[in-house]
Length: 463
Image (cartoon, rainbow, N blue to C red; front, side, top):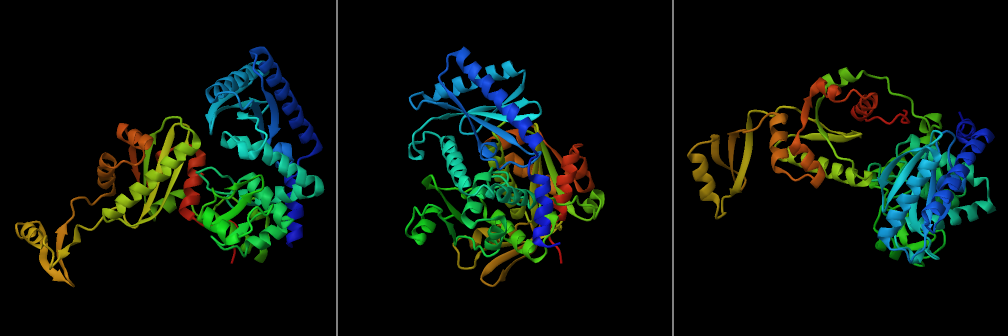
């Protein structure tokens, strides 16, 4: 298929139909009326305003999250903004008869379920300029206004954004949250505005270089080098409404490189698999686990804001990986899966069991500590040595811990791997080794994620 054939096919799937638009618009109108009624009944002075992809008309068919901001006067104390924001949102949920869940970003907010749609009701300040923001979410209305004003000049760019969003989702780099460290919807909108189309964006991204790619739509910075030095991120896209901010700061080096590689691969061999990756069916999970050295740690976690949770999860993975390496294991890869109150940390090793003996290096022969080392091992504990190798004393000794389960037990009891995760692990955990790793959760999504992680082959790669 040609690039244009692929894009035509994808567009047929991602552009909302008139019926879907009408259905979503009806829900949005219903939510706005419920919020207006709730604020009136509770005596709260607030303006409800729709933001995000729905307001900008860049949402994907069958995949819309509705963002409604409750805009408060800047004179409102922060505690009152939070209290009154939740009060109005809960009252609106009662009016709608909707289920709701409290979540937390820079402020606590509510996610309502209305006729099958997720609606985030977020309190923010109604400031007159992005330079006067009192919290990070206060910029969002300015983002909406900026993008909408630019789309008025070229409405066709909305579908170009849809293509880029679906592409980012398909290659696994969509989302600015810590769990993903990828591209936000707003960032993708800015890329299309800068390059002019989906195809032009992909062609440009194929030639990006980390720490050297700089985009400044409104030309806030006269000196490109100064801006790159200021932000020091792999990708720099200056926020058009706030030059102090790099919209691409959440994008990790790995996510940027994945986007570059996928762009290059798409230009070589266009396919819908970049947008809709096929399910992997190459090797059964049990077979994968039997041929690999994999260990899983399962524990129970408290409800935390997603970015707090995943920040600590990533810290825990790094700490435990480093600890296993120091214990003598070779860690090939690590991963984490979470759902509800269950967290599973996964590690693939060269081997689940270490050899009985290890080579242990002591101090240089000219060190003041050499006598202590020599004396210790002359008294016992060395299978061979002490002897000199290069300028260091060396012994061959028996390992105290050989199995990965023993090593993890010691690490968990002594390491601080992040406040919440450490507490959870010390309250209790289970270790699964080898084929039993598949039994750590009965959730089908866990098995899917586990298989993808073990294969680590991007569905869009082709020879």
